[in-house]
Amino acid sequence: MTDAELATATLAMMERAGDEALDAAGPEEAIRAIARGCFDLLGDRDAHLRPGALKEGERQYLVAGAFFVTPDRQWHMLVGSIGFPPEQQRLLVPIDGGHPGRVHATRSKLLLRNTDDHGSFRQYLKTSRMGSTIFAPITWRGEFLGQLIMAAQARGTMREVDLAVLVACARIAAGVWVAQGGPAWLAANYPPADGFFVGREGLDERDRT
Image 1: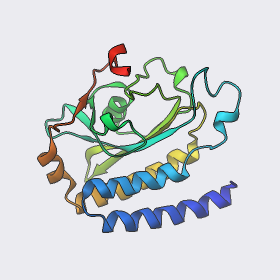
Image 2 (image 1 turned 180 degrees about the vertical axis):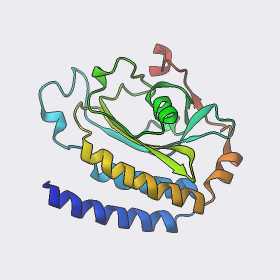
Image 3 (image 1 turned 180 degrees about the horizontal axis):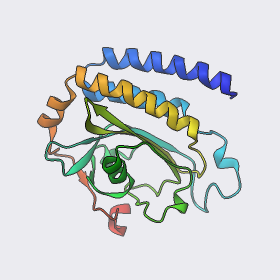
Image 4 (image 1 turned 30 degrees about the vertical axis):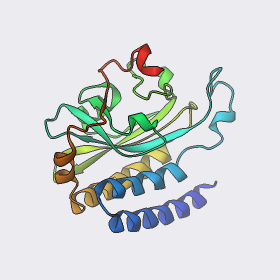
């Protein structure tokens, strides 16, 4: 896809995802509409074909969703996920855990082209350690609400252009989340009965099976 084609596709995606989010039945469905738009469009879809992008036994797949700060400000709770294991639909990562914790602390967007180059990267996804990921803060009137995220197994999948689109989508997500009553929904649904809590250092071996 050329830069011009990506720009056209991005505008179409944001219009469609924004409409779906505004018409959604609730805040999680709204966030999932935004995440789905990113999931379907972003990332170098040929990255897995390059030497070294995948290690032995790995396969290319992607995930997307949002982590919102819980009312007690102790956790990031997964909302509107795409591609995560069913048992991790309510993944909860410590507020200072891994790179989600870094994004929370710095209030800054983040691109990890190759997570192997970042020794502090932690595996929170049960199925595997992701090889490439992007994060974009979701803020409202100066308050950090959470972050929109996307990740892929193959190293080099996520690029600067993907991060730029994710940041723009995070701005839409912030407005939609508030308009759809997200903060009240979060307060009513935390702590979740199906919460999958992980430690700061990631999953231990029993969690990965």
